[in-house]
Amino acid sequence: MTVTEANGQGGYAPAGKDTGRVKPKGSSSIRAHCGIDTIPITSRKPSWLKVRSPGGPNYLRLKRLMRSQSLHTVCEEAGCPNIGECWEAGTATFMILGDVCTRACKYCAVAHGMPTELDLDEPRRVADTIAAMDLDHVVITSVNRDELADGGASIYAATIREVRARVPGCSVEVLIPDFKGDEDALRAVMDARPAILGHNLETVERLHPDVRPGGRYWRSISYLGSAKRIDASMLTKTGIILGMGEKAGEIRRSMADLREAAVDILTLGQYLRPSAQHIPVARWVTPDEFADWKRIGEEEYGFRHVESGPLVRSSYHAKEQAREVEAGGPGRIQAVMEADVPAPAENPSLIQLRVMGG
Image 1 (cartoon, rainbow, N blue to C red):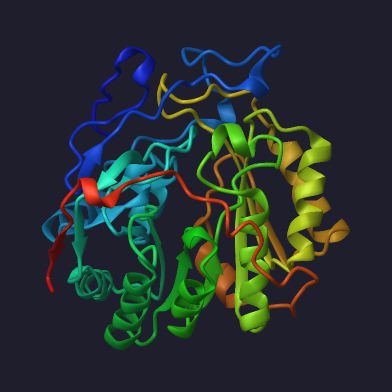
Image 2: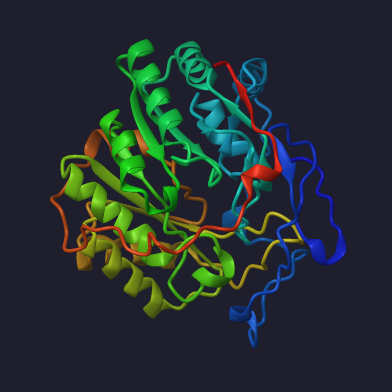
């Protein structure tokens, strides 16, 4: 990760980003942490969170390949703890649409600001790289691009189609933003036929306004429900981060709400604080508790699969899920909610967007 520029109250603003103008994310203090003892960033992590530093030959090869194609990975941008394991195994999660996000989530290591570029040639380069890696499953995600009319949905669709044409045996999983609740954008992505459509809820309803100010709890849930209405045969997937201050009853409530939208796959992982400018960790969730949540999610709430563990992230064991999990039918929630609530106010007229590869 690049060196962070801390500017007092300004907050997290990493240097070295090449596709936009970075803005600070603001204070790392949130109301939900008032009255609780959070974990200092200098504290030792529990033994179950220790991972080997990346640096094997395949890791270094993939890093060179990504840089040669001017591509980004969420593995690097979000500081994923599994990067060494996954890259050594020849898998990576591509992050399209640049490396600057229009939203300022308080837990996320991806830079916030105003994008300045739209790379129309990116889908081809992603497909070429996947072919060079000889992958049979790939995960594609992105930053939020709220300044674009379709939120970047057309680039997602083009990338899926390029990969399917270039590497016919490779299944494509996408982890999309909420596109501000735009169902036309959702249809554009689904029409390209990804194997799994993912969109992360990230946290429980009470914490949403503090840690995910640009998102909306019910918009995220209902967006997944709308996907099931459009095509019930498509696997849907979401993720929740634990350790940010949520309570057990709230996790159960979110599970129930997600099942109302007939979400098939749920991932649960530990929040790891990317820097001192991000919200603190409220608690370390033990492996035994993660195992309990897997059992509860599958047996009590009926998820088709729950991937739950301290180091689990959205794309962890994604290939196995695409091969082994069968999609369920639509749920009670089928219409997009909170689509009329504005995303963060960004004025694209203040900046000149450079379109590349057009």
